[in-house]
Length: 135
Image (spheres, rainbow, N blue to C red):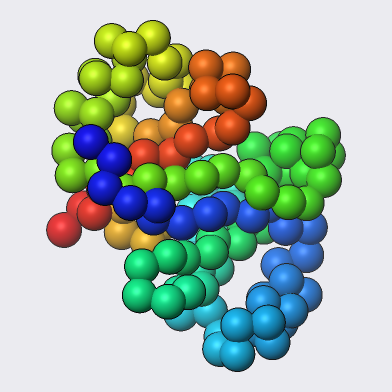
């Protein structure tokens, strides 16, 4: 079951410039930067209020999924992420409801999460991420 919006992911062409811009916008620096080698991405997280987060996603190399996204669509909203309490159960429920998963098993993501994505063609064109705390 979806518990809340966990974060909004933004694809960014220049992560250093975006970090400076969002730090000025929010009046505080990112609380965490993290490289996710497997995905070829560097992320920065900004806490907004008590529950919401913004995740900036910068490509580490030309072949990464974020680089391909930026080439095709340009910078902007990449995905909406929702916190779930049991990611495997939620994946099974959504698959039974006819949603297409991008992988059969969750994988390790940034910010100490297990993650899974729903294909945008099954969610009205929006890339949806499921997140569960690992700890």
